[in-house]
Image 1 (tube, rainbow, N blue to C red):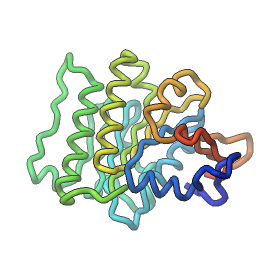
Image 2: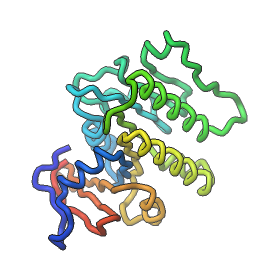
Image 3: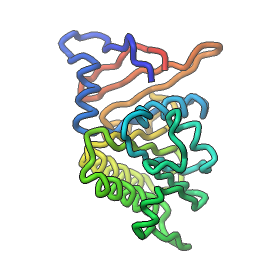
Length: 234
């Protein structure tokens, strides 16, 4: 995700964007990805947010309205679906791709039974994957684990607002607890009421857009600073 030239607009007393990014990586963070863009643009953002392919990153990809065949375009170049550092959950189709070491270690995967709440099935497996990587690494390094959830729109439509927000509060707290970086796709306008309602749960929003004939762009909104950045190339 290209961040060259990105800076906050307005008050110069606000810490620089590079300082903010360093803080988010060090302390763990959750990012809400907004903007009614194509799947191709969303995948481009995800590839970078899942981390440098040359670095030892653990990656969890949770799909709520997709299939595992769509995962590869979201993974960083050179990172394979069957990599030992990748755990994919396809919540709608009941499919998954987990590290071979998890199978060998007899990790007990959540069962999916009729009548169970699919939202909490998803939460259970994400927590299981986080715990697996945390244990096998002897403790995750800051920003060493990356989580992608695509998308929140489906979850918001299928579950009550109370249950949906409880799910997000739990998951974002766990991500901060292991100093990981989570990003959550909500492909609707950044000024939509749902974005306004959910924004306090996240450390920042990344708004995406692609105007006719132009390259995809991004800008960041940081509620704690009450500031937004300029638009820059994605």
